[in-house]
Amino acid sequence: MKIISSPAELKNYLVGMNQSIGFIPTMGALHEGHIALIKKAKEQNEIVVVSLFLNPTQFLKDEDLEKYPKKDEADKKICELSGVDIMFFPQVSDMYGVDEVSVLAPKIRGYVLEGESRPGHFNGVLTVVMKLLNIVKPTRAYFGKKDAQQLNLISLMVKQLFMDVEIVPVDTVREKDGLALSSRNVYLNKDERVEALKIASSLRRASAMVSKGVLNSEEITTAMRETLAPLEIFYVEVLDRQFNRLSHVEIANTVILVEVKVGTTRLLDNIWL
Ligand code: AMP
Image (cartoon, rainbow, N blue to C red):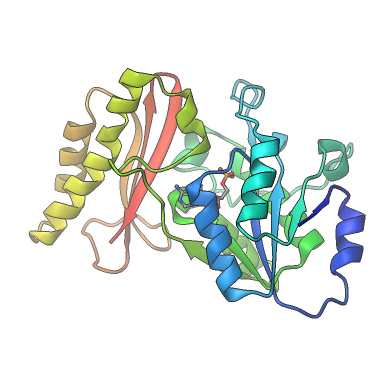
């Protein structure tokens, strides 16, 4: 596995390769969720590139940038063992200068849900993803469905800015007890880890209601809020796959999203029905 930290060097290395490139952007502290993205990329492409970059512009001032888990050496091992061909490992100064051009998230879809509680977060996400896609120029880029709003906004950016890359969504990987894997799960203490299971329980409850024919969004979100209590809830929403509110679940066109605070940790999850 080759490790490259300079954007110019990576561009030079990839130029004229004439092979399909699968790309997985990450912020490190890799887990089975990231590995699922890598596996899918390996199945579908000749070369797999993973970037590991803790992107400062997607963190708000009072957020966890400083304490975000760092496991660089373990991450390199995981990538190597997963068959990654190239790991892109830039410094902040390689990626950002002063007085920067940036990508702005759309005014509505970028400022609801997670974008409402973290205003400006998605500007940082879209800007760094645009930079990374321009450096790697992949055939396909892989994103987790767990971050459904991020996936939706990146797909919108690629479509609306006429970019030549296929965005591939990958199913959420969970612990055996249902908790969605996240680099931030390490912040949870033992009691909080138990409390966090309410998130998956609420989604299972929603799914069970739908299987029984209850399609009314309000009924579903009320039941989910009941299951989530007494956690602090940022949102529980029933949306279509384009992220418009739905009054009723539409089978095969619905995402139910939850974001809560467990202790001081914000956790999000969703199901696609
Ligand atoms: P991050 O390092 O948190 O920025 O995540 C990098 C990519 O991994 C994003 O596309 C995430 O959506 C995806 N990802 C994170 N957790 C999971 C998971 N549990 N299952 C599937 N994909 C995930």
